[in-house]
Length: 414
Image (cartoon, rainbow, N blue to C red; front, top):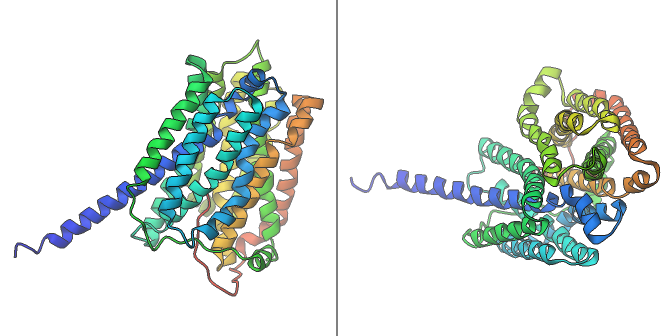
C-alpha cells in the first residue's frame, strides 16, 4: 500500500526534469540571440573605434546572419550521428569564448574573425535547441505547441535584450564590458548544458537536394519564400543602419538610447501569440500575411524623415508588421505542404536569414553613396514588390493541402 504513490511522484519528478531541461534550453537560446545582435546598436561606435566606414561596420552583423541561412542544413547531418546535447556544449562554449575574444579585439580584422566564429557556432546552438525542444519527453501536440511558443518568445526577447543590454552597458561602462558579460553568461550556459541527459529521441531530419526542388516547385511556394526573403531583408537592413542615422541626429544619440530604440521588438511576442486569432478573424493565412506587409510598407517611409522620437514610436508598428508575416507564413507553408515539413521549415530559415544577411550588407552601398532617404525608399520598394507577390497569392489561403510523397518529421522555424 505504501508503494502506490510512487508512480505519481515519479511523474512529478519527470515533469520537473522536463521543465528544468526546457529552462536551460531557453536560457541558452536567449543568450545566443543576445550574442548575435549585441553589436548592432554599437555599430556607429565600433566604426569609429576601428576606423572603418558604415558599409564595413555593417558586415559585423552579416558575419553571423549568413551562416544561419545555410549552416543548419549541415549541422542537421551532424546531429544524425552525435547527440544534440554534446554538440550544444561545444557550440555554446565556443560562442562564449569568442565573445570574450570580441572584448579583447584591438582591430576590425580580429573582431571580424571572432564574429565569423560566432556565425559558425550560432546555427549549431539554435539547431540543437530547436531539436531538443521538439523532442523533449512529452511530445503531445499541445505540449509541443506550448514549448515552441515559449521558444519563439525566447528568440524574440533575446534579440531585444542583446541590443538593449549592449547599448546600456556601453553607455554606462564600456562596450568591451558588454561582450565580457555575454561571454561569461554563455560559458555558464555551457556548464548548465553539461547536466542535460542525452535524449535518444532527439533527431534532425536530413534535407535532400531532390526534396528541396520538390518543395520549391509546389504552387506558390517560391513566391512565399521570396516574400519572406524581402521581409527580413528590409527588417534587418533598417535595424542595422539605424544606429548610423541616429548618431547623426541632434548632435548624436547615446548607445543606451539606440539600444532602447529596439524596444518595439517586444511587440513580436504579442503578435506571435495573437497570430492564430488574427488568421481566424481574417479568414485565412494569406490575408494575415497581406495585412502584415501592408502595415510594414506603410510605416517604413516614416523613417526617411523621422527624428529619434518618431523613429522610436514607428519601431513598434514596424516590428508588428514584420512579425505578423513571420508568425503566419510558416503555418501557411506547413499546411499547404502536408508532408516534408522539416524541408519546408529548413528552406524557410534559409530564405529568411540569407535575406537578412544581404539586407545588412548590400544596402550599405546605397546608404553610403545616396544617403538615408534614398536608402529607406529603396527598402520601401522591396516591400512593395513583396506586397505584389502576396496579392497574387491570395487564393492560396484557401488552397487544400498539397502532399509530398514521403512524410518527414516537423521542425518548427526559429
